[in-house]
Image 1: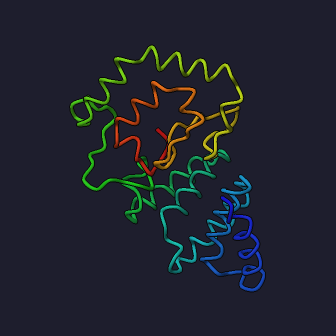
Image 2 (image 1 turned 135 degrees about the vertical axis):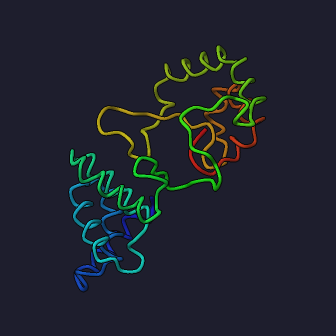
Length: 200
């Protein structure tokens, strides 16, 4: 996030000189969404850049963000068309499964049994301690200042907060001090503790 303001400035200057540069257009559109949460501008630049079909413009991130902004603007039919085109180009598993990070050979299904996950031991530990986990969570929630604004711009409206315990494989020591049982369980579960995508 710290480099986005500088990227926006450089891309803006690039587009002043080369207004039809597809790579600059898609990146500028991406920055409009990621930095400014400006879906109106993001749609203009992402769409125009993608339509050039220049090398570097046909990337799942651009299709995903164009479709996401269209949905946020209420243009659902056009969003579905963008997602379908991305799926047709093999950027997404399908127009409905649009994750940007996939594990090869991992079967997509809506529900998994504990046994199917191969993480039964860790999941059983979470189940055994659900009441303590709940109590730690409620205590942290009451403190109010512990929860930070949601950082990935996932919400359309409302006030979403997050309380990170581990982020991209790094332990949040301050938050874990507030939730020692929960963090202890996660620490004993290396697949969650070292996860580089998302926040367990």
